[in-house]
Length: 343
Image 1 (cartoon, rainbow, N blue to C red):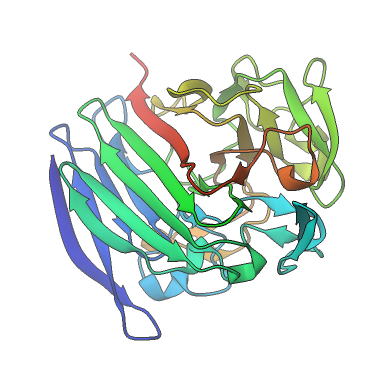
Image 2: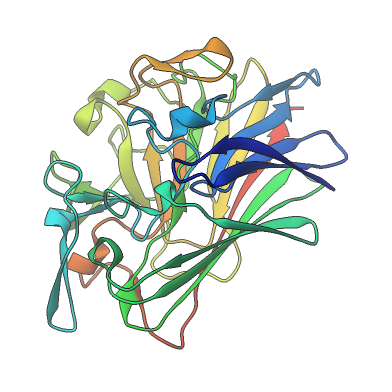
């Protein structure tokens, strides 16, 4: 395993942002920067051995600082996904968060972990990103210590191991927001997707859960068999997938297969395995005329996200898997993206 470090850009305060490139003996390369602990690139081969970068992003670091960046590759927190009205109650106290999307809190607020400078450290064959989030930041209680360890195996598996501790009871929900396109560019409608879940969380027009779980059976949400992403996408609420699939009721200790996506022309495959109880499947419905890598222009439904996480708005739904973290406990999550090719 090789890890290369090189400058990628400069923050407004003068801090230098580095790009860390992990490469295995098979030539797979994963690029990660310490702004947002974000995945910048993943280069994998097709069935003919030709490599392509299969995640959306920018060549120029400054674009990651711009409002047009839709969380490309970022670690989202403290609370990934949505919290209704930017508000939750913990032990009888009301906590108010920023309302940065339609009157709700998205991905931790206006200054979430995706917009933070993380401390990077090479640990063995992996890259550890660390962050301290002070008590009261974005309205969340507790001084939070967060780590994400990225590692790449010889079997072309990218492994993300999250850990966090707090000195006050709080809520936490972390995920990675990489947008994948296994063809490298163009529409994802012909990608075939499988998501191994029988239910999803019902949401309103602002993607806020009602508290009700719906069966996928008989609907456009049923992706339990290989299905072209575009087959029934126009039937999906909101004109595209942006929903939490309920993988299991309890967090497991080892990653479990949650989803598989295949691009038949290239033969590339990605599998998402996770210890989390939910998977937000998002099909890039709001991408519009974004100038991306290599002169590409990203538009609607040209990237998909497999965001392993707890369920959205869990602090406001006692029956959902808990996202509470108390002093003395350690939040932990393992998510893997395993890449391969059709034989």
